[in-house]
Length: 435
View 1: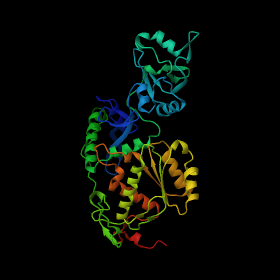
View 2 (view 1 turned 90 degrees about the vertical axis):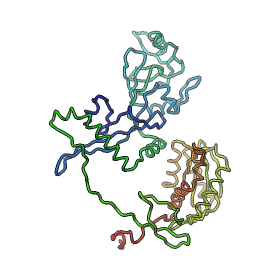
View 3 (view 1 turned 180 degrees about the horizontal axis):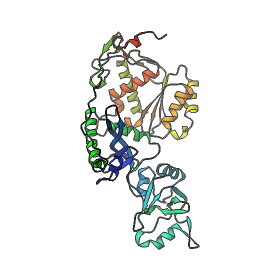
């Protein structure tokens, strides 16, 4: 089935047992990447017959653009005097190492593997041609002047494609539709999660379309083996669990039970409820790492947080301090310079709240210090949620539902209980004592 899809009239890309068609609809992710949906197929033997399991699959691919454009997509700014510093060079090697590129100065698309960038510029990288030393820049400008048309930038590095093999950046293009390698950023992972959400009905429709495509591609091949595929899906009787009764506190602080809305979702409104066990947050600090935020924006968010918390039964006092800091001064020292000093200078400190921009490593450093080293609860808020949304609506941090989600995390981290199963909904083994 995989072989047939790769060599069909409309060739597709295979990743192990998954098949993708990168020419179909793409979901842009940034960083030179896009999300593409395909299908996964697996043939298994059951008691009665052979069955083919088909399911939806997703994968991240790279765009096929000139390397200079790819560098810009990856956040590497190339401007006069066109030097690339060590940090950017290492970043590019990490993102692109092992990917295939092809060249534009030859009459055919010869492919190479990207291995990194030289520390020396194209005018200072020396190669030996017929016993004569010359720079990569001079060699290409002399031999391929009609193809290059314009002189090469003298301060650009060269692309390393093998031992003592170098190419100017200008002639290199990333081969399209290559699967992304290595660890994906948190931003891309969150986008993948959002883009992948579909209802069960939509998912089944996509699976049926994938099945039709798979059978169309494979039909001529499997007939040679005397095999045919029944395209009618198998019907398997499933078990539908009843909606459970959940228990919160009524506004009068007496326990009250309710059933979640359809599809397993529920809200703290309709009717209004309190957390089952709400905490009191008396001593806490706010640290802002986004210098673009104004103090009044932060205080407006804090005021909204306190207001919504009161509806859920959570009592929150004003923070002791709201400080704006620079991450460059605290990088690698969040624990010793913030958590340690805060714990020493404040009694009964309950929580540190951080407003953070998209800084690689900042969130991880905060959680490592708070959860692992010091055992002090922390809550991070993305500073992008302080900006007005694209449709002109107010910022996300002033949205009641968003703040409700934040409060559920805060209440739980401080030892509270948000919601429990009603006693009548508990199965027998949960009603019995365990000790």
